[in-house]
Amino acid sequence: MLAAWWIAMTFTTPLYHPYPRLVLPWLVAGWLLVGHQLACWTGSGARSEQSSDGTSPYGRTLTVAAATGLVLILLAIPTRFLTRAVPAIAPRTAIAGLADRVIEAVSKQVPSGNAVIRIWGEPALFFQLSNRSPERLLMQPAGGLQVIRPGEQPPDIPVFLVIGPHAGDRQNPTDDLGEYESVGTFEATPGLQVLRNQPPGHRDRPMVFRLYRWRQ
Image (cartoon, rainbow, N blue to C red):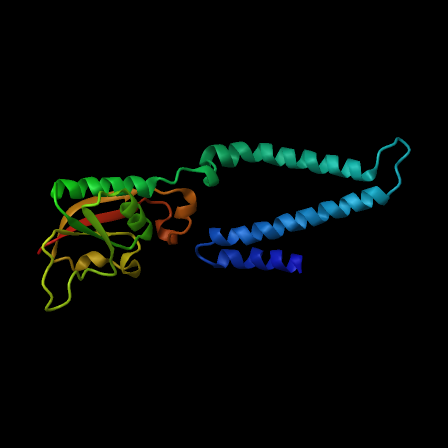
């Protein structure tokens, strides 16, 4: 059953687009398989008779396995870790820095008083803006360009819209921005694990965010 788990995850993980999250159960299965194999080696070594020179076959096997693993790690360091860094410990503050830049741009437009910032297409930016913005700036998740329904009164405070890379289901949502004026464009380059979750055509480029102000 454990082998079936590992084999199934090995073949199905690459078929799922945001595959890094599926690597975790695959790693768990791999760790269990390695632990099971080590336990088998330990048991067989304990039951085997020692050779004439006082060493056991298990001891020699473990030494060879450890030496092989050490050589592979030493070969991987210059080819993998030094050239591309370690994704697990890479900085993850790109969206936080982006939120600070958006707040600065909105504050220049509206130095005082309340304002609404609507975020479309990037939940992480909504989270960071909600945590880092002053109380006078109000955050609102958006699902499109429409600010008010027909017949409703427009708000009496400025409204801004941030369009992220996931807005419009990967279509271009900037084709119908007649009610908006552009404020600025921002780029953010997240860590490797976040980039792996992007569409294949966007994994080697920064994430682009556009800030607009609604014409009331």
